[in-house]
Structure formats: C-alpha cells, structure tokens
Image (cartoon, rainbow, N blue to C red; front, side, top):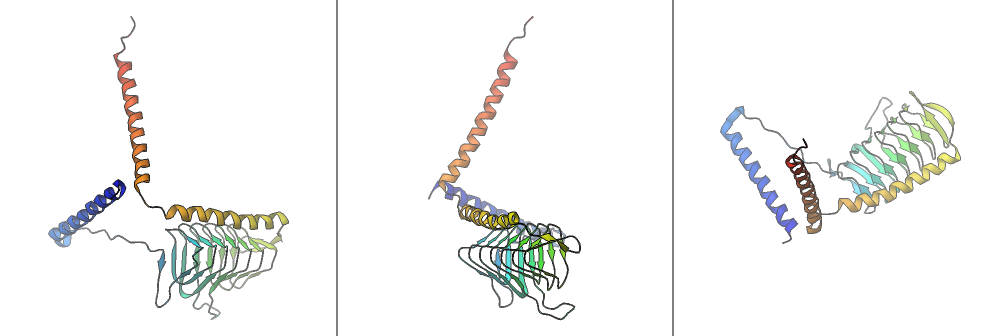
Length: 257
C-alpha cells in the first residue's frame, strides 16, 4: 500500500471513530442533545422512475446537480453549482452547449396557459453564470447572458442573444439574429458579426476548458500527490524556521554604543 493510501485509510477510520463517538454522546445526552444532519451531495439523482442521461463526452462538475429526466448531449458541460431539475417534465440539452456556474434549469408541468412545457436547449449554446431557464426553448448557437431569466413558453431562436440580467417574459419569441435586453426584455438591435464569432469561440473555449476540469476531477490522492503536498509543507516549515533563525540572530547581535 502506498503512503498516500495508508494516510487516507487512517484518516477514514479516525473520522468513522469520531462519528461513532458523536452518536454515543448523543445517546447519553438524551433528548437534550444537538445533532447536525449532513447532506451527501449527488451529482446525478433519480426521481420517480426517471434518471439523468449523460453522454460519456460531456462534463458535469462535482457540485452540479442533474435530477430526473435530464438528457445531456456530447461535448456539453454543466459547471459548478448548477441545478438541472427535470422532475415534473424533461430537460434536453444538445451537443457542445455550456451552462455556466450557479445556473438553474427547470421545467413546467402546468402554468397559467395550461401548457406542458419541457426545457429544450439546442447545440452550441452558451448560458452565462447564474442564469435561470424555466420551461423554455433555446435554439442552436444562441447566447444567454449572465443572470438572465427566460420564463415559461419563451423561445430564443438560433444565434439570438439575451443580454445579461434581462427578463424574458412568458411566451416571448426572440427572432434569430436579434439582441434583446432589459426588464422586461425588448428588441435592442441586430447581432453583429463580431458577436457571432464570439458565440462560436465561447463554445470552443468552454469545450476545451471542460476537458481540463474533467481530467483534474478524476485524479486521486496517490503517492505522488501526497509527496507534493508533503514537500510544500516541509518547504513552508523550512521557510518559517529560517525566519525564526534570522530573528534570533538579529536579537543576539550586540547593539553599538
């Protein structure tokens, strides 16, 4: 057994022993004890009879949550803190799409119009951080800015852009190649060629970045990694000792008359 695995095993059993002692203490304290409930996060979670379907070439960050009837296509990436909740309906995401940190995607079983509304997101779509998409459709190569909200029945067509912080109201349709913004969102102008190029580059950049994060998240704390951590600790200790020695020497130097 490598040194790293040995330390991991010892640490595991220490933690288990600590939890067992905590449970024993709670029993001794009776009804007056305080118990903290720990939540064990699950990246992929079934609900009812539905389970997420994630392509092998897609990346889902460890702190993201895909729940229920969610389909994620190849090359797409779901970043840290995102929640995709397909419990009351389905969520479908195409290929090469990126949904950035802390975004929320949900569905509508029914709304004021009585329609059943899944959320459908096409290929090569960029969705900025902290965006909210609810029971809507976003076509290929569209761009949803940071903290934008797209509500039930809204339809964002191909290569359209929703500006950061915009609120797209229910049943609004944003035509292809248009930029909408504001609260409520309204037409502002046409998408420029420079912006279209940015949409494409954003998709490529996040696809490449997702591969880096995916590789990093599959690493285990093996002996090599443990040695690196130990080396850094020893280096910090040596630096600290050097500073102490310098201070001691400066105190022992006799002061001039």
